[in-house]
Length: 73
Image (tube, rainbow, N blue to C red; front, side):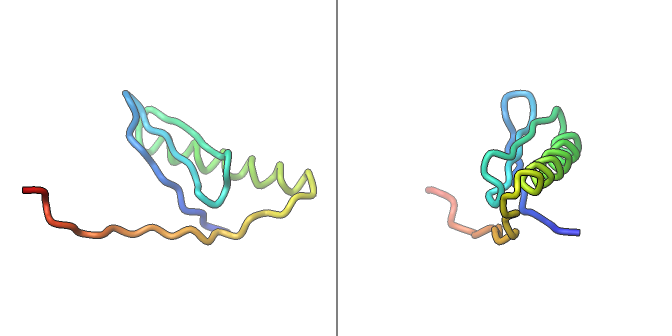
């Protein structure tokens, strides 16, 4: 099992997601849970395609964190 960072963004009426480690791999969904499921399927398909084409499968290296900043005055 391998884990890739997925960034989920709220769009206009739905959600979109992408993985910084897998350029071009993206998904959408009506809810956060749907976009997570769709993104998991998209990543699995993306990795299979890379392997079938004899291309290297990128290692998951992206990380995410939050930082706190003062609210604007």
